[in-house]
Image (cartoon, rainbow, N blue to C red; front, side, top):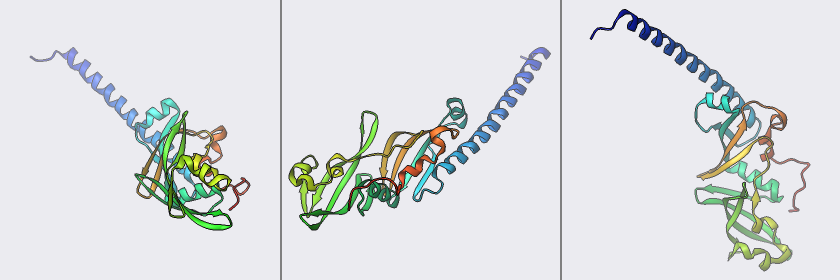
Amino acid sequence: MALTRSCRAVLISLGSVLVVVVTVAIVGEITVRGRIDDRLGALSEHVPGVHATSAGGFALWSLATGNVEMDVALDDAAVANVLECRTGKDVEVATSADGIAVQTALDLRGRSVPARATFVADSRDGEWVLTAESVDVGGFPLPPSAVGRLLGDRAPEWLSAGFPLPSMGGLTVTGVRLAAGEAHLMVTAPLDAGGSSSTRPLADLSCDPTSPQESR
């Protein structure tokens, strides 16, 4: 059945409106995506071994919510830097899907004793913590929960209590994923820098020379 002239006019008008809407949406998506890329680049700038990428989703949704979902990847060197900041000890790190294997040396009775622990990510009351799943000191496996009791005050607290993830002003860690050679933090960040989030929050993943550390 042939369409009347008025029906054709309505369809043409609707088609024109649809083209305009789609064009505006595409242009808007590209523009906001550029803002997101700039934001991600600024967040991880000058932080060695740390790289922030978009976790996906539409850029216009980020504009509507004012937040961007991102994946912050830390290579093994960056993870080691974080742990050295927290422990004051030299560590070797190997990250895999099974956990973060950490090797260091402990001072026990005046002797340097090799220690190895594997840490996994755990959420406690909305905060993420790296907790020891296994501990080996001097070649002897120890239950993580019993490290403090067996080694006494010679055992560093982090070996049994784990590592709370560093506070990153303005950013919220929503998840942790471990992979070969990398630890990934799923993070929600303000789309635009402002307030506490404007002071390079990912820099908290690197050592602050003024922060107190445990003695080596």
